[in-house]
Image 1 (cartoon, rainbow over the protein chains, first blue to last red):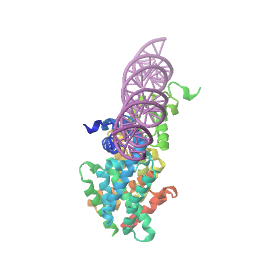
Image 2: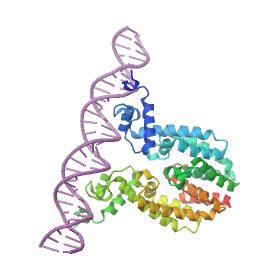
Image 3: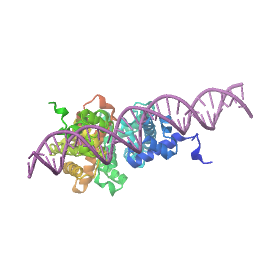
Length: 187
Length: 187
DNA sequence: ATGCGCATCTTGTCAATGTCAAGATAAGGT
DNA sequence: ACCTTATCTTGACATTGACAAGATGCGCAT
C-alpha cells in the first residue's frame, strides 16, 4: 500500500514544512501558495491550514526551526569569534530558505513565544562571543552590534546578489578575507 | 471640476507610485494589492496595470527611483567615508519603502537597464569613497565589501527590528557610535 | 474485541486578487 | 473638423487564502 495515499498521512506537518522550504528556495518566501504545497505533498488544498492555521502560521514554524538550527550552528563555533562570523555566513548559504524567512518578521508571528525563545538563544551566542573583541566592558554592546552588522550585512548582500563577485567566488572564502581584514586591523 | 473624477487623470503614474510607497510603508512590499492602490487613487482596478504592466513592473519603477535617490544621497556625502556610512543608514530610515524594495531583487526586474544603471551609480560612490580606508590598493575591494557590509548590516538589522535597542534609541546616533568604534580601531 | 472520542484530512464555498481582452473617452496634432 | 493614439474602464477568468462542515480511521477505555 502506497504511503502517499493514506488518509492519515502521519507526519504531514514535517512534509509541508519541507515543501515550503523547497518552494522558498526556488522562488522566495512569497513565490508560492499553500495550495501548491498541498499539491506537492499530494494532499487536499486545505490540509496545510489544518496544521498551521494560516500562511503566517506555517512561516512561524519555519522561523522557529530556523532560529533553532541557527543557534546550534553558532554554538558549535562559539569559542572563536572569527568562526562565529563564518558560521553566520555559512548557515545563511547552507540553509538559505530558513534565513530568508527569519529576518523578515512581517512574514510570520514574531511575538510567538517559541520564536522569541529560539531567537534569544541565537542572539546570546553572538553577544557573548563578541565580548572577546571589545576594547572594554563599556564597549561590549557596540562591539556586538558592529560584529553582528558586519556578518549580517555581508550575508544579506551576498544573498541578494548585490556583491558583483557573487557568481564567481566562494562566499565562505570571501567572508574569511573580509573578517581577516577587519580583525587584523583591530589588533 | 474635481481633478479626481477626470477620465484622463494626467499623472496617474506618479500617484500610483506614491500610493505604493505609502502602502509599503504601512504593511511591507507585499502587504497590499494593485486593486487597493487603484482604490486609493480613485481609479479603476486595471488602471495601474496599464502603466506598469504588472506588479513587478510597478516595483521595478520603485526600485529605479529608489536607487536614483540613494545615489544622490550618497554622493552628497562622498568626500567623507564616515558620512557616507551615515547617509546609507539615514536613507534607509528616511526612505524606508524604497529601501525595502531595492535590496529584494526577486520583487522586481533586476535586469531592467534603468535599474542596473541607477544601481551601478550608487555602487560606484561606495567603491570610490571606501578607497580612503584601504590599507593598500590590493585591499581596495575587500575594504569596500567590509565597509558596505557594515553599513548594510546595521541598516537591515535596524529595519527588521532585530536590534533590541530599536525602540528607544536614535538610529543615526547608534550608527555613528558603531562607525566610530570600528574606524577608531582601524586607525 | 468493540465501540467511541478526537485528531487528521477532505470537500465545498466565498470574497479578493492578478492579469488579460475589448471597449469607452478625450487630448493633441494635422 | 477629424482622427490617431494614449489613457482609463468594464468585464471576465483562473488562482488564492480562509472558513465551515463533513468524512475517515487511529488508539484508548471498557
